[in-house]
Image 1 (cartoon, rainbow, N blue to C red):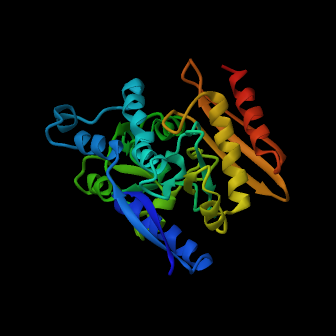
Image 2: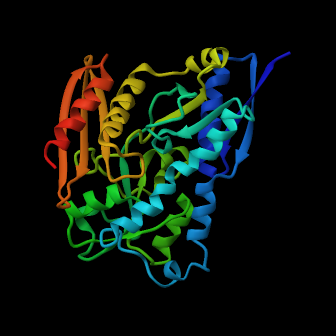
Length: 318
């Protein structure tokens, strides 16, 4: 008789698609194990629904410029880890056996009773522009309206094109794309990995290089979260762990942890291993609203140390 593991996932199409991708990888390595998905409505899902509701008069009447109201954006973004908190509670209470998340949504300060049992090979970490007239970033008309729910993206966009109006939008990928064709915005920015996983790459106008747009910590990576004490489950999920991806994102998360920020703050980081050398790039926003961006490199076997050193290097400039 095969063992059945209960898998916790958000209900969104992207979350369920990503969960199924991970389960397929697990089944290939563990054919004797079955997996049952439990769809969980998180606090973040409820907040997103309310935010996009027609009853929300502010959203109904105007789009919010996230650069003019950064505090407002951060408060809204603070619910980002709430996409994982309810799932984590069910994991801690043994209602589920494993949880599958987008790593960028997982707090860098997890409950000590939980661990990231496996981080599979990372998808594309970059961001993409989708525009109504198929125009790239440099070709968009002056004062174009760009929609994003990320202050990190908005700040970096503004540093490239200060004329652009960066407005706050929410919702799933389809909802955001519709805002372009409904002429609410001229373009939007989304993570490439999500578009790839949902088969929506046809909408991409331009993929922004890492040099132009530093991604969020852990962007493009998925994570399997488990209870620290469950060594048998750890053996099962560890079979699809990618050591290169793990080292890269551990450096990114160590940097964010040192900065005292989490996945919802205007912080970007990207680690890349080549020839046993881990290069880590990071960015934060100074008190004078200036982007501080630095790079550091070191031995791939010490990602935590590299992350901390990069954070300190940037903090010294604030």
